[in-house]
Length: 177
Image 1 (tube, one colour):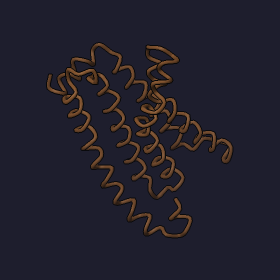
Image 2 (tube, rainbow, N blue to C red):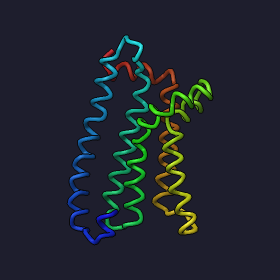
Image 3 (cartoon, rainbow, N blue to C red):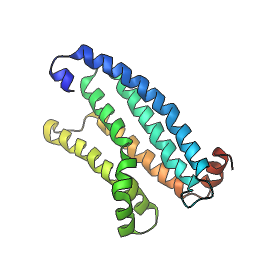
């Protein structure tokens, strides 16, 4: 965005093209790493195969949102919202490591405490984007509204899968056990 403001659109486009290659690499390496680490930690206290639901939906959401941002690169308001939402979506891992234990400890076990421990911090940032739209534009941008709905639905599905007894045998098969 700073490059665009400084009228350096050519540099922005070149960096964006490189970033899309990096995003493509992330979409390949993310699931591979998640599967490898679940296999590596199998049988230890760190083993949590159902957590693959969170990891795999995170990378899938990032891929969808980043691709949508790339596809809408000629629509600046949509493009910048979508790329920021893609980035915020995958920030959940860092926020969950930093704040999740405390949130989970306060709220206990269950679907919503797990949801909050994983997604509360980055969802507050995502809601902040919507508040910015409402304050500056008096309405939500359609790209934001659609993507935010997609994000919430996917997060809900991920936590549902993580907690579902049906998912665990599938996760175990995915890691080869």
